Image (tube, rainbow, N blue to C red):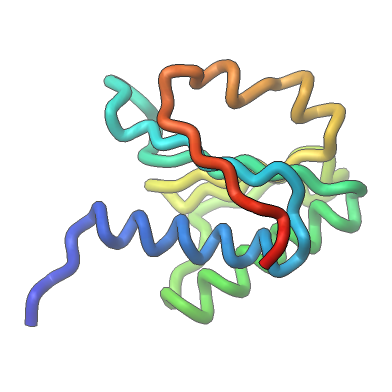
Length: 125
């Protein structure tokens, strides 16, 4: 049996994360491909917005459920669920940032990693 590559595994993980975000109607979903950036801390950032703390937590829960069902994987670390203005889910090769609108604009993750390859996703499943 052929072992799948890390690249293929990472891309499958990104796909399932996006599915989880779309399932709960995440807003302004983008991926930042950092693989060609020297000294990047991960392969991908996935960035998404939610409308409220309830929505942000629902998005995080949906990501966790979709990834667990499809890939039998779970995040290495999750933080921010208490106030849910910014939830970070660390899957090691992929880091998910789920923001409310104000904090997303303030921290401007996309601007910080402007050299990344950016892909936007529709807000409908």
